[in-house]
Image (cartoon, rainbow, N blue to C red; front, top):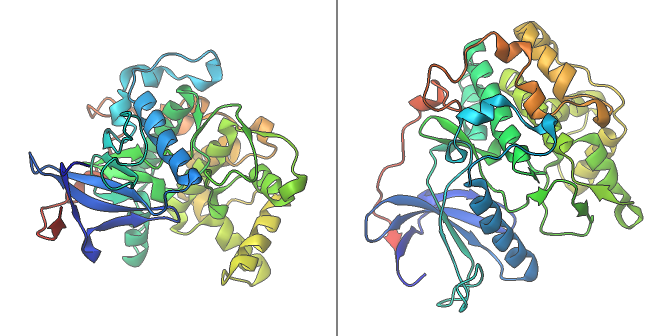
Length: 351
């Protein structure tokens, strides 16, 4: 990108990696500011589509909130929050010869430059599990509120993420923000099972989404709905208590099978697609009654038509009993996450 950035090419510089891209620590040469540089592994049409969508969605997400036409997607709590407090900030991106998002005119690759976070929510959960130290009730409630508020903000903007999971919620200076929005689509978008620019994670996908994907070529029309992300939120919030993906754990317990290859993942998807009721883990039920009520009564609800929106869930008893947002300038800030150290300079940068 015309030599404006340096990228850490060491193993320690890798911030995350997916099937289509790898994210590394970088630095703005002029100022020395640390950033995250997302590099797409391929330059095919699917990656170009994701790149352009990523840029377009991130730019849209940074615009001030406007109340959507659907009142169920709006909460008064969104009136007191800035988009930059909920969504990762876009700093720069590769452009084609016309200055549009596309292949870098210098080397032909696809890049996105964003602010740098400290760690993902998955990293936090993994650390708590390794230390055998489940988060406190206060911490779970604060993180749950941050998750619901972030996704409510996304839906108020008119988008569905389709792949909400702990890896895609990142801690930025103690605040939880949504990342990896290149798979987002507008609410109501007609989705094709053959669209390779869309990602999902079996452990966090809603049963109706699993049924649709399993139909393959026989799949009927499927419209992107906020309820898909709501289900994912329920899975993540439950995991904060159990420190394990609840449906993966339930599947393993019921079938005595783990995940060794693609066939096991398909078998799990089929099991999820047949799910006709949700049994809350006892640890969640006993942890906090209001939390269990939120998950079972609003988020992990079958059928999908009876699932509440994230905006509606912000008014549930779990959050009504706590003056969230009044103690901190940023309502997505979680005291426990603020203790995570920020990234420091390294010497492994290459132009």
